[in-house]
Length: 361
Ligand code: FES
Figure 1 (cartoon, protein in one colour):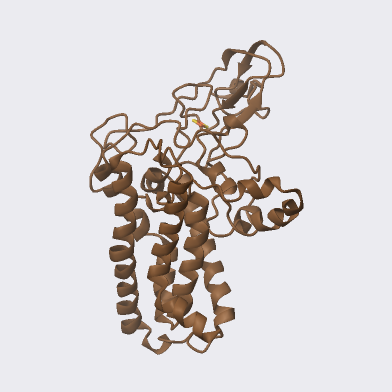
Figure 2 (cartoon, protein in one colour):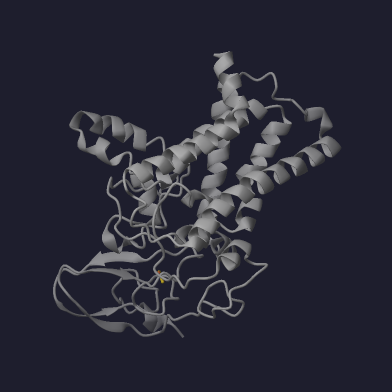
């Protein structure tokens, strides 16, 4: 066993590249790249993001942690070196992943972090490289990369290297255009096994739902399924949805395209497009009003009611809630007809007006 651990450690970087090559080959063989709409800028952002992260940001963070550790905490150096590998590995991975869960979730709920994470959701196709597209600063602030440095400083370098290989296997696999779990859901006797698998690790179906454009398709929810390696955090913090289905439409509801330098280097470089969230002048203005809006609904049609009060298409959601803690409310019209939908956003019977606006001054 020690031999296996040692070789996994020695070849960890090659193994991560091997995982990328493996999934890229699967995508090629399955013909998934034949009709790709991915642009040169997409490839630059994804492949470039991978290279800068691997060769620049991660080593830099580890270097800084070692410099700080040796200066202020030198007596703790190698403190983990006697901890059993089989205890340290799950402990390292669980702490790493819960940190990333909250960081990722914050990337959807706080405006500044959303602007750093937004390039990830601009991808309109899933693929083996998609997990690497975020602004450079997003990675620099990522707490679990600092955790890598800390555990390595404490003598857990072998554990970190092997943990990273396992984690990349799950993450690259859940972003890949190869939906490896899809056929497994259809095999009857494997269905209970897959129920256990999807409740432990992040599967493509689980993660694709997070990348779908909006809840309107009944499959997607960009404000759910934040997990990276494990799906347990979403279950624990009530953000999990399991549909075993794959959204047709991946990406953002509102997607003014920016140059890749603007998305990767935000906030150093801001977008020149005034419609972009990354421009210096863009603001999400309050569009909620003190009166309800009368709309015509069609029986059986699905709608997303804006809860955040910032949509430019009130009373319906246009995706402007990204970067806030608000989520749109999904509803299906039960009959044809005209209704008053709340636009003060204070109703207690959303999406319908309950006259709460009358209490506004
Ligand atoms: S724009 Fe989506 S909830 Fe307001």
